[in-house]
Image 1 (cartoon, rainbow, N blue to C red):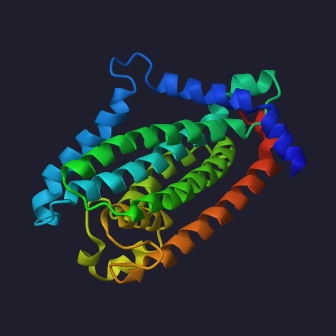
Image 2 (cartoon, rainbow, N blue to C red; image 1 turned 135 degrees about the horizontal axis):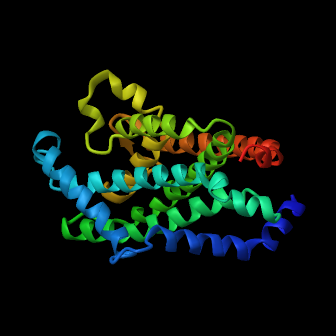
Length: 266
């Protein structure tokens, strides 16, 4: 373990440069730049509120916060996983010329997307204040699902970046799977209004993260003691945490096992 930590510390400056490069490239030739990180989720929320507000959010003054919170978390996972998936192939020129720990590429992709996600939380906080969300000290518990989200994103990035080197059609399949994940994450609808299908949705670890985040942000109870739509928030927290750690362990294993073969397929 010490060997891997020393190796990571040795290349930490390169990781920092890769993260900065990713942020710069994302907004290259954009007049708004980082401001778009704040505007995009707000505009998307306004569209979803306009489309689904009267249909699904009738009578709920906090419905925009409900949508925005789910939308931001899903977008973070979606963007991180898609960019990390292509990270090895996108950096094939550098990989062929110099030795760099290959895990830095998917890791930096997840990191810079996560940083942009944290910046976009400013809009969520402002929207919550404007709409009068009743904040309590439990709001600080949002840190826990955010950490789990970060771990899950790294896990997905490692697995997808490995498989995509050998099976490039995964890019198209993952777009379809992301759409399925989105509709199973209760971003713009309430889970108690969909009948028996909610049993399947509860097995979606990303939904569990979103539900815990909303509980800490919008509800007065703690994620350790409260219930959301008849299920314990603590059980969802444990499930998503265990799933993420197991997925990360698998991601590290499969990436480490196959990283020496990347040069033959990129």
